Image 1: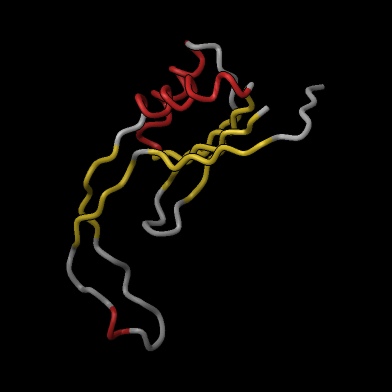
Image 2: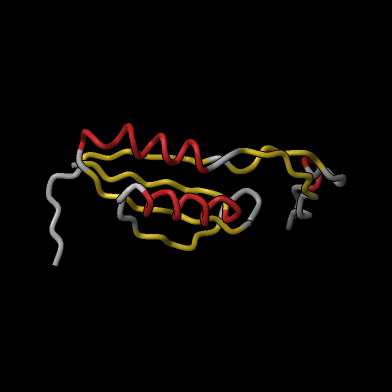
Length: 109
């Protein structure tokens, strides 16, 4: 048994949720916030049998895409002004960050 934790950008969460349901994959969906851009993310927790892991990873890969976004960094607090970049920068966002963990026991009540 495996637990797949997938952190995806909010823009991709609806598509991923639909594709998981269409393929009979049950998931718990959590609203989360990213630490770098302080933007909304969605975290999916998916419990699945070992042999379905490649299928679930393909669903995630095909549902979530990375994209470029222009962001203006927040000004720092305190005395860290020497590392502050005062102009917009382009960063890559989206896609999915996925963790696959071994599960010792699974119960559903």
